[in-house]
Length: 108
Image (tube, rainbow, N blue to C red; front, side, top):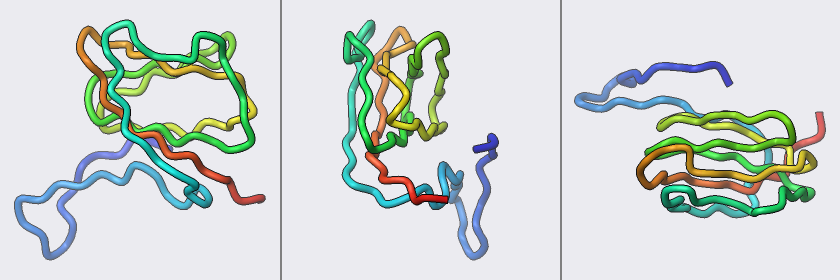
């Protein structure tokens, strides 16, 4: 998803919103995670049938995907295909808080 800025929706005051994701599939479950400094996992990258939608609330996360990595800052999201071996790590000097949604992607 392209980077977007915060906006004030019509008929709102003192209210800022930023769209993090659109229709990406059926949400299976979700959790909130607190990744302490040097924390993350799993130690050995894993795969699964569902995808992950990661949303960083505060801090900075690093998603390892084989030889590649994706850095997510606060207020950013990333949809990861679960078939790609991956692990997620705190990339900040403070606790990183993130929301993870398991998503069954629609066939396109």
